[in-house]
Amino acid sequence: MSTGVSSASTSQPSTSSGSNHYKTCADDSVDVFEVWSYLVKNWSTELKKNPQRIKQLVRQGIPAPVRALVWQLLSSADHDNARCLYAEFIRASSPHEKAIRRDVTRTFPGHKFFDESGRGQHSLFNVMKAYSLYDREVGYCQGSAFVVGMLLLLMPEEEAFAVLLKLMEDYRLRELYKPSMSELGLCLFQLECAVQDQMPDLGMHFRNVGIDTTMYASSWFLTMFSSTLPLDLAFRTMDVFLSEGMEIVFRVALAILQLCRVDLFSLDMEGILRYLQHDLAEQFDQDHERLFSVAFEVAYNKKKMQKFEKDYVVKRSKDQEEAAELRGIRAENRLLRQRLEYLEQESGSLADRLIDKQVSLAQGAEDLVTLSHEMAHLRRLHSGVKEQLEDAYDTIRSLLTKKGDHVDVGVQVDDTTMIEHIQALQEELVQSQARETSLRSNVKDLSRRVDELETVN
Image (cartoon, rainbow, N blue to C red):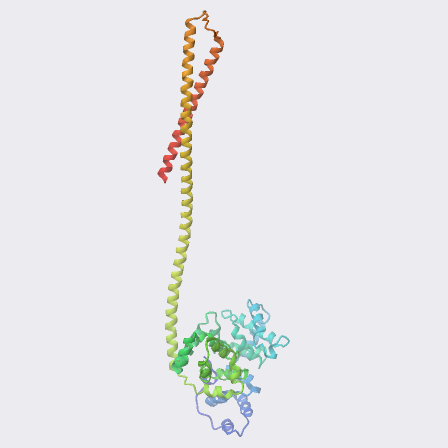
């Protein structure tokens, strides 16, 4: 990570006139603005000769009139390259424009520069859109708008874009703003471990009331405290961030918790979140130096932070394995649910078919009984017709033996009528036999169907 001063030589201050400026400044006999004016004019030389002294001066606060220029010097902003890129991207369209327009009104909502009638919202939209096109992997993250907003309060759009590129790349802020936010997860884990290491009682209280570090500290890292602390303190934090890197964010975070720990112990989860997200500006508005005085005295141990980082890598790897296992289980469960739904549908279909078969079986049995009754009736009818036919045949035979004679028994037999009667009986007998044959066939078919249904069931 490029950190301006820290990347330069660590040689001792020179005895040149520049060194005299530092000495008299320390003795309060020279105006701070004069010292910084000298530094700006001789930046490259003084950065090589007196990096530690510049670091000390940055910690004391960069004067507002030269802050914009010093930020650009500390970050080594490449204005020529940024100017060309900005001119290209400002004319293009970004898929994130809708989200950016929505959020610009939420960035420093109480600041006049960013109200609806101010030019800040337009400038903020332009810079955020340009970066979303420059770095498509990061695209747009709401927290970055506050950092860009701080830049725009001090410098024009093109210069702000140039510094933003350095913040994102050399200072690794883009790792915080990536969609995965893995770097943010690391920072929050390190802060949680540091709190547990330095203030275990406060860490225990947070756990007891259900407070997780992500709930109160995410915005601290994403916005460099500009969304929670007074703007002057956020500027001071950015001063040191450009000189020393992410360490100052941890220092300020731990200093806040140390200075507010008594109040925090008396609050529940809702109260703690409100305090750390909305009430900090009031807590430190009148005494800026108190916060930074404690921050620079915080026991920040780089080796411990590196150990916390290794622990985080192990934890994240384990979490990823568990997440992968969980995804596998969920996928298997999803397949099982689909299989169950299929079986339930199939079971329902089988049940419907079984009911249909049972209904068909009952109907077949009913039809069989009906046909059996009808066949019995036809058998009786057939028997009666057969008897009548036999009687007719007996009568015919009797008449034939007495052909030509008339038997006077009170009734005269008409041969023609008798013959017609016999023919009618014969036809009725034939029909009865045909009907009986048909019924026998139906009964046979129906019996076979009933047997089949009983076999299926």
